[in-house]
Each structure stands twice: as C-alpha cells, then as structure tokens.
Amino acid sequence: MKKVLSTILSLVVIGSLLAGCGNKAVNTATSTDGGKETTKKYAIIVKNTGNPYNEKEMEGFKKAVEELGAEVILKAPDQPTAEAQIQMIEELINQKVDVIAIAGNDPDALQPALVKAMDNGIKVLSLDSAVNADSRMVHVNQADPERIGRTQVQALYDMTGGKGDIAVLSATSQATNQNAWIEWMKKELEDPKYSDMKLVKVAYGDDLRDKSVSETEALLKTYPDLKGIISPTTVGVAAAGKVLTDKGLKGKVQLTGLGLPSEMADYIESGVCQWMYLWNPIDVGYLAGYAADALVKGTITGAAGDKFDAGTLGEKEIIAVGDGTEIMLGDPFKFDADNIGEWKSVY
Image 1 (cartoon, rainbow, N blue to C red):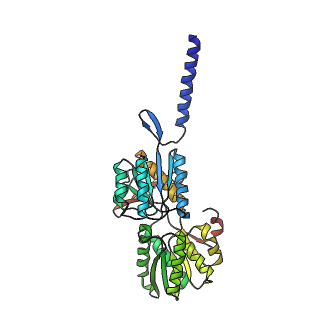
Image 2: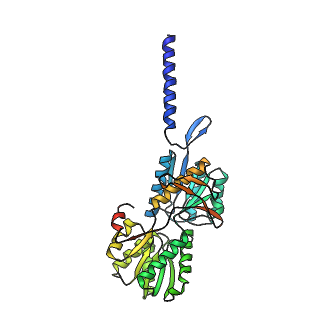
C-alpha cells in the first residue's frame, strides 16, 4: 500500500513540474492574489459604436492582449460623449481592471474619472484622441499632427490648382486629434502660396454617418462655389464621398482626408476622391495593447526615453510632446488609384 501511495505522489509531483514548465512557455500577464494566480484585465474604451475605425482599433488591441496572455475588455458607448465614457470608466474601476486605454471624446471632462482610476492603481493611457496629460501616463499617437494637418492641405492644393473656397468636415468639436490637425491646416494655409484658397468653414459631423452627410449637404448649399473638402475622420470622408457621388459633383468639388481603404475604394476608383491618407488603425490598437502591458509590468512608466517591445511593431520609445509624453506609430500613408486595390480588402 505504501508503495502504491508513493507511486501516486511521484506522479503528482511530475505532473506539477510538467505543468509549471508549460506555463513558462506561454507569454502570459498574470498576478498573484492570496497565493492564487489571476489573469490581468486590460480594457479599451473607444469613442462610439458603429465606427469602423474604432472597431479596427479594438481589433488590434485585442490581438496584442491575446498575444500577451491577458484578458481583454472592449468598451464602446452608443454616442461619442464624455458622459458615456465616464460611466464606463467607473464600471471598469469597480471591475478592478489593471489598465484602461481610452480614445477620449473630450480632453478634459474625463480627467476626474481617469485620475480616480489611477488613484485605484489602474494604469491609464490614451490612444488616437488624447486626454490631457494629467489624465493619463502616456498617449499613443498615430502620426505627427503637424505632418497630418499640412499634408491634407497640400493635397487639396494640388487637386484644386490652389484656387477656391475649401471647408473641413471634422468629427466632434472636442476631439483633441482633430483639433490639432485643423490647427496645423490653418498654419499651412498661412503660406502665401495659398493666397487664392480660402477656408470658409469647419463643420462637425460628430463621427456619426447621418450627421456627417447632413453637414456635407449643408456645406454645398451654403457655399455653392466650394472647390474642396478635407475630412480628417473616416466616418466624415466616407459620408462626403457618398454625397459628392450622389450629387454628380465628381471633379467639381475635390475631396481628401483620412479614410479607411475598404470604405473609400469606390470613391478613389471613381475619381470622386483622387487620394487620401491614413495609417493602420489595427496597428494603433495593437501598439496601445503592448504599451498597456509595459505599463502594467513596470517596463515603462510613461516617462520620455522609456523603451519597450511592441510585438510585431518592434521597439518603441516614448517622447516628450507638450505637457505629456507620446508613442508615435508612424507617418500617414497615401492611398490612391494605383494602390487602393491591394489595400481595400485589408482594412
């Protein structure tokens, strides 16, 4: 009987050792709670539901978190408001998540809730649309705001021959990324070479399709001599493309901006939009996922000069920008008739 018990105990010990070796071979994000190993929880809150760009960001975040072995929590309010995001932040605090990544609907209104999250030991970072520096540890930026803003004005200059009234169709009036890009557009327009181009209106479609359609129609009605529209938002540029197509304004009103290749392919192939720009929103979310993990593990603190491994994106370094710090994904990419075919099925 003793021999049998001894054999059983030996098998249990061997099994435990094998299980331990197996765990070491997996890249997991876990913590110990009272001697019990628990999986860490990484949450992302995007601007709103029904936004294809946001959906791709969540897809990238989920991919990164799954690679890292943590539990992913995806959140998106019905409407792109700070109030809706605040409610979700409170819910995540109660769930005791380890990190919150957020694309802010307002740079300042979220501060009390996000500070509360950090006071509760939750790591906080923003992506895409930044919250203020006091509300987060670091921000994941798609590209340099100056290059994004100036590039779109330069594109419309080339399309229109540098003459005529132009307008901007933005997302929400509180979106920090949109506002930064628009400020750089205005700075670019100060160059004397744009003396025959006039910015007549900045309209806001709130990243809602129907409202973006209505705002585009209002621009065309209010400014009958309008020669071009810049829409630095995926929802807005697709809505503007549809309106210009439906009204037969190809070549009469030029269009550029930031769009998803899958949504803009028809308009680029038809010539309604000669070219537009974007980065890969999947990569934005993916980078945020790895940055979140680095914050939780203490690899980075959010300070300038910190470096971390970002999976397939390679090593990334945190830089100082304004009052806070950021991680840059890369430069905006130009999509036109020559390459849209190969990208429209990707995202």
